[in-house]
Structure formats: C-alpha cells, structure tokens
Amino acid sequence: MSNSSSITMFLLLAFADTRDLQLLHFGLFLGIYLAALLGNALIITAIACDHRLHTPMYFFLLNVSVLDLGSISTTVPKAMANFLFDTRTISYSGCAAQLFFFLFFITAEYSLLTVMSYDRYVAICQPLHYGTLLGSRACVHMAAAAWGSGFLNALLHTANTFSLPLCQGNVLDQFFCEIPQILKLSCSHSYLREVVLIVVSVCLSFGCFVFIVVSYVQIFRAVLRIPSEQGRHKDFSMCIPQLAVVSLFVSTSFFAYLKPPSISCLVLDLVVALLYLVVPPAVNPLIYSMRNKELKGAVWKLMTR
Image (cartoon, rainbow, N blue to C red; front, side, top):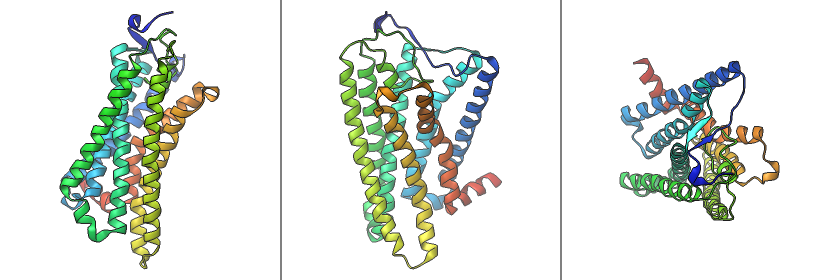
C-alpha cells in the first residue's frame, strides 16, 4: 500500500505482451495520428489563407481544428512511445499535465461546438440579424469564453483529483491518465469531492447538449421550409456533420464518466476512450471537408499548389 506522496509514476494499460502486437498498435496509432495532423493542418491552413472563408463559421471551425490537434497530441504520442519502447510508465507530474491538457482541449472544443450550433441557428433562422449578433468582436469573445471555460474546468478537476490520497497502487487501466481510473486508486471518502465536480460538469455539459439539440431542431424546421432543393442541401451539408460530431463526442464521453462500476471492463473502457478521444480528431477533417463544398474547394486548391 502506498499514498500519493510516495507515488512518483503511474503504470498505464499495456495493450499486448508480445512485441509484434505492440508494434502493430504503434503503427495503427501512428497512422491515426498522422491522419489527424494532416487533416486538421490542411483545414487550418486553408481557412487562414482563403479570404472567402474568413467568416464566423470557419473561424470557429479553425479553433476546433486547433483543439483537435491539441487533444490528440496530448495522449496519443505518449501511448505510441510506450508501444515502441515496450514501457508503461508515466511520471506523476506528466500524468497531471496530461490530464490537465486533455480536459482543457476537450472542454474548450465542446464549448466551441455549442457556439457553432448557435452560429448555424442565427445564419439560417435569423439571417437578417447575423451580422449584428455574430460580428467579429462577438466571435472573438465567444471563442475566448470557450477557451477560458476549458482552462477553468481543467484546472479545477486536475487540482482536485491530484489532491486525493492514493493508496491502491499506481496502475491505471487506461492508455492515458483519466479521472475515473485515478479515482479507483483513492482510499479516502474525499474522492466524493471529485465525483461532485464531475456531476456538476456533466450537468453543465448536458445543458449545452440540450441547447445544441434545440438549435438544430429549429434549424431543420427552417431548412425544410426552403423551397429550393439546392438551398436545403447546402444547409443540411453544413449542419449534419456538426450534429454527428457532437453526438459521437457527447454519447461516448458521458458513458465513460457516468457508467456504473459494475459494467466497467478493460475492453469496454478502451473502446469508449478511443471513440471520444482518438476518433473525432481524425475524422472531423474528413466530415467537414467532404460535406462542405467551399471548404473542400479551398483544401483542394491548397493541395494542388
């Protein structure tokens, strides 16, 4: 038995014991990571270089791509290093830093996805007020608020989680530092403070999700009244990818943090973590670029140069 003051490192989940499988996992993670880097970097560069994309929607999308790069770079490189060098260790401070930046990036991204739903609602349902409600200053303020909320949420959870006494060893059943796995190592009722924080965060996140759903319900009602089939297709092509991304992220992350311990198992926890942590940053560029002609044209123009 050990306490938190004596823990200098954690042991992360080992996917496989054989060297061949470790190298296979390294190759799979490397491919996903490179796809996420390339896709998001293309979107960021295309939006920054094409003046036609200097609109609120693409400004928020640029921020989402930056956050995607940050979130996947916080966890996947360490996992790849462990696969490649046949190790499982992460330092105590490294685990705290990984948890902080992971929470920072995903919270800020979820906040930005909420803002993007509001952007689409105003653009489609109140187009005459779009310039007033979503001017350049308002967009900067909303983006700053999203980043700020991510920082505050990450700071609160990280400080509270790593202030808990840990006496159940140092083995984490996950390939990165995750709050539910760290709470399993606590031997004190003080972990309930973090549980309360998680519940509060989930309630706020659920409120944002309700706002997103209501916004898209209003959007779809407005789109269905558009007489032009081409106009309906254009609006749906902008909204459906955002709704798909939000639904995948919310459903998997809520399940990861709210599932009862009785249904927890290594395989299930691993699959859920991959779905809300690794998959969205890799598929977001594909979803947005394939469903959006303007962005697809800008990316193609950038690549052909």
